Length: 553
Image (cartoon, rainbow, N blue to C red; front, side, top):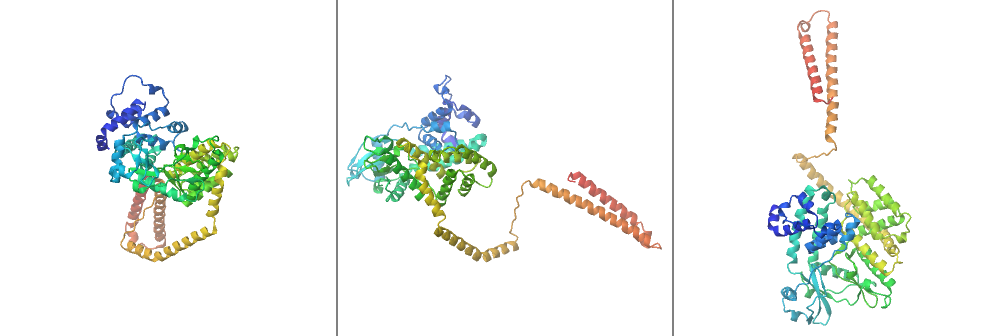
């Protein structure tokens, strides 16, 4: 850590000084990093009078791309962070000026190994959008197709990797010194975010995501996805087909759009990605959703995607049914099947909280329940009990909320639960389909046959290990000290009883033997009785003393 701080000392100072400036100096002090802070201004700063959430948002915006992205990811984790913070972080904006056309030109020519004029018939110098990771330009291919070209910001990878290294260091230190950081598992959340951001900077990943959604959407009547032009793309460049349309929240009835139909098509298209294919758009906010003149929905920007296995989708359907029927046991079973609830969770307390959540929705008509909010509430309860929510499920929760917000803007009367129910029923039918069950049974039988076939070999290996003394047995018993203490007490009492009984038997034997002998014998003439009696008494007293001294009697 020390080497990392020295290597990135300038950036450390920027971050820690910004924390001071926005009123988070106590965190720097608690982490023991005051020496890295430049002397802050002594006059009162206007930020002093802002709320904590607002100061945090402004801090993240000032610190740049990595921190803005981190805040945007945090705004999707309502299972961890409170509502007032989520609301403020959702306002995060990229206030980043575009970089120069000369830099754009240099990157394209370096990656595509040709002059810009040879690659495109035309290329607009002014970007149509600029963000923290890259910016977008319109262009025309030699084939005559209109495209948009995303170009990654110069040196952004170095900047982001530096910030990620510093953040990992600071969070690791915070987990050691601040209990609340450890309770929130912020380092685990950060690692998920870090991997996602690294993938987002690699435009090849986005190209692959887009192509997969494109293949899924070939027969989708609701949604279409623009083409990818791989020969004009690289890790730092992404060329995709130009989408001619209006932002989904900007369309109006006066312009000829059927808002209710558009809302329905958009929701069905996303639900098909989620519940049918298990590979879906992870950030369907209005800026990424366009409507063409014929009412077709066009999706762009697949830098963030979610993935759900068939088993996860089916359990999600069970979860929805449990929520709809307000059946706590079904909800708990679905959470167990999804590996959210582990063995260490107190399931009695968890069920109590799930019952409380059920009662919150008890008198609300199912058509008026927000599925996104219900899922988020569910994840919040799970997080309270230290359950681990997979990152793809948090992306799912965010996507569902985005879908519901857009749908409610277009048609407040449209009920999401009515649209999602057919997908859930299909998944449940598939779960109990005899063909699927027979396939699972076949797999189980084959696995059992393999196990039986391997058993003799495993037993031979075990036997050899026993012969060579290589078997190690490790027993883990809760409260082992108490158990050993009890065993000691029992064994000492048994020892005491045995010695006492032996002493009694010896004495009885001596007395009986003496009484049966009419004539004195050599044995009786010797002082053996007295010697034996003294020895027995001493042994008895020693054992009693040892037991009492051990305190385990």
